[in-house]
Image 1: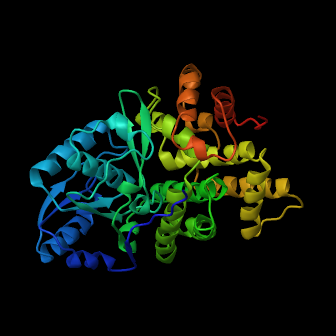
Image 2: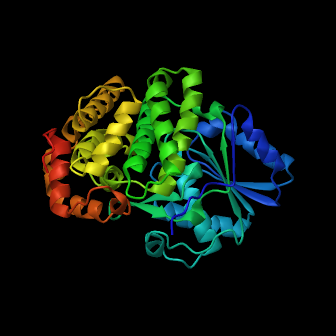
Length: 398
C-alpha cells in the first residue's frame, strides 16, 4: 500500500533552534561529528536550550564522515548507559545518520546490523526515546528521511538502511548552521540534493505527493546553488529549504541507481592519496547523474519525466530526447562551475584498481536497496559497462 511519511514537526528559519527549549523529557543525548559545531558555538547553544527545558545532557561526539558499523554500535551502548528519552543529532549527514542507527541499537541492543540492512525491516522504535535532527549541511536531508547510510569498512561498502521508523520526530532547519559550510562542501551537498530530487521524480515509486516536492526542489537548487557556492546568505538559506524538500520527496518516492553506484564506490578504493581514493558522496552523484539519465532514457516513461524537468527549467529542445540532453548539459555546466570532474578518471581513481574491482562493484551496486526503484532495470553486466562510461567519459549506448 502506498505511504507518505514526514516528521511530525519541521521548524525552519532564523533562530529556530530555540524550539528545543519546549521539548519535554529528563535526559537528552546530543550526537555530533567533528569540531565545527563546537567551534561555531552551535553545540553549546543546543545544550543550553535542552538544559533550559529541564533536561540532563550527554554528548557523543567525534562521529566520522561515512560513519562505521563500530561507531554506531559503540554509540548505542553509550546511550544505553545514559538512558535518554530524546536523541538530538546535529551536524552533517554523517552524525545524523549515525544517530539514527545508534537509536536503534539503544532500543534493541540485540538486533543484528545485517537485519537492519534489509529494507523496511526495523523493529518498532520510540519505546525509549524520540529523535530530533538538526542539519548543518544542505544536501543529505536525513533530517526528514527514512534513511541512514552506514559503512562497513571491512567490506568497503556503504549500506543504505531504510525504514519509516527512523524518520525523525522533529527537524530543525536553522540557516545559521548552513552559513558555516566551505564552498566545496556547499557544492557537493547541493548536487546531492539535486540528485535526490531528480531520482525521486523519475522513480518507479513516484506519486502525486512526491512529484511537486521534487520539482520545486530542482527549481530551487538550480536557481540558488551557484550563488550559495559563492557564499550568498540568502541563497544558502534557500538551499537549506530546497534540500529538505528533496528529502521529503525521495524518502517516500525512493531513489535510483545514481545512489546505488555512489554507495558502492565511496569507500572501495585504496590506491592513491586519501583525497583521491575516497569518493565523496555528493561528488560521486554529480559525476554519475548525467550518465544515468542517458541510461534511463531508453524507458519512455523516464525520458518524458526528464523532459518535464527540462521544460520546468526553461531549457530548449525540439523533442523529448533533445530536452533530456539539454538537462544533462545543464548538470554538466553546474559541475563545471563547482570544479567537479566529469569522469572517475578525471577525479583521480586509479585505472588498474577500478578495472580489478569493477565486477564486484557492479554486482554490489545492482544489489543496493536503491536499485529496485530505478525506472529502468539493470543487471551486473550493464552496470559494469555503465561504470566504464563514467570512468572514461564514453557515450552511454546500453
